[in-house]
Image (tube, rainbow, N blue to C red; front, side, top):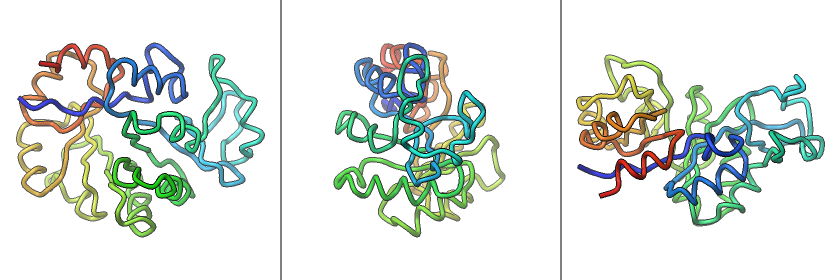
Length: 225
């Protein structure tokens, strides 16, 4: 049985406000190998880490600037920029950025490239595979992934179309056959969001490369030798 990479879904989101520096730091403390987060482009080009396109007050992130976002809080924690997250986690965690909305690809890959060695460590992925294709054009050396909630007849076709390394697949659509096909074609499989110990063990036995989870502590207890 291989040990998949443990990826904290929006950070340690069960213990800290999701997509905040507090959540990412707590994920590292719990033993995560990586974090998954969501990025949007604000009106002035700032790349903001936040799940939804709308803020709690109903404003679209695309309509406000980084300066306007700075005083806002999520359960007491600041809404971070991607730049702040990359600086805050340093080399402790791999960062997987889910691209959301127009402009998010250019801004995110620019920041990842500016971190130097991180271009070889971090990655981007999206449900909108056009954003993944844009990321390939802008930064061919940056690892990419495609998000899917399905089991296509040609299971690696979407990844092949945009030169993606990773298949981010909802856990209900992951099986051993998928992992075999993906690995044979040179891809990795990341299952999300996996919060059950039996499923974690089964996927590890399949050779799944990454488990995106809300419960890092459970994953660590379950998967560590």
